[in-house]
Length: 258
Image (cartoon, rainbow, N blue to C red; front, side):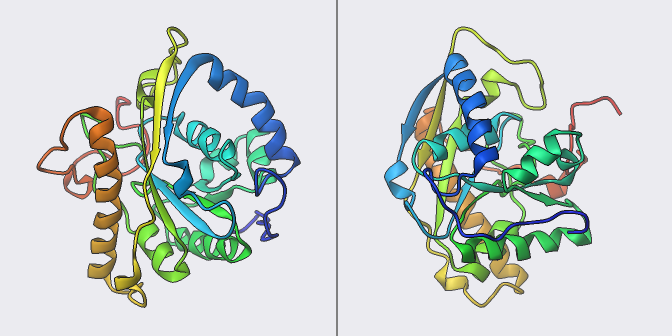
């Protein structure tokens, strides 16, 4: 990715994958998260303590990455994410993210494919990669996971790394979808539940087969939704929101006036 230096060094430290910049960020951010949220964390035993692993989750709020990182960090892994490139262009913040080992992605462009190369190399080195398969905050009116992009499936098939589904709920209360105001009090319960590893072996070798990628993607999102239903105490809608059949923009804040 032009202009960015991605490190493929093997993960070190405790939690595994931490570096000085990551540790400083955690030192600053975690106390803030503790002050404004309560935790309902389950299933962390499903996350391998070492070696390559992909975790995938539903996406509700701008806070999701911080909350998921908190969950992973306190359970032994310092994750790497594939984040939209615009964030990396923000002065100071962009340099901090790069120094912490995060990877920029040019969404909705031909260059997006380069992110797969970086992710595979990071997995080969033994890192944990965090992925939001939907590629953006859900457009579903009731915050259910929507039909996702196939990037996660392709990465899982090519890398053959373990894939752990994680459902989370509550971040949209602290910071509403595409909102920027934070609800401080009373503290909001954040539920983060990890499930057992997913089996993508039936699709191995089919990373160029569009039908296989669609099936594998639906399989992963179904697993996330299966975890989410008991957390919410309700069943998913019969019809899953499909951004491909919507007039809403594929990425970005669809709530802004246009």
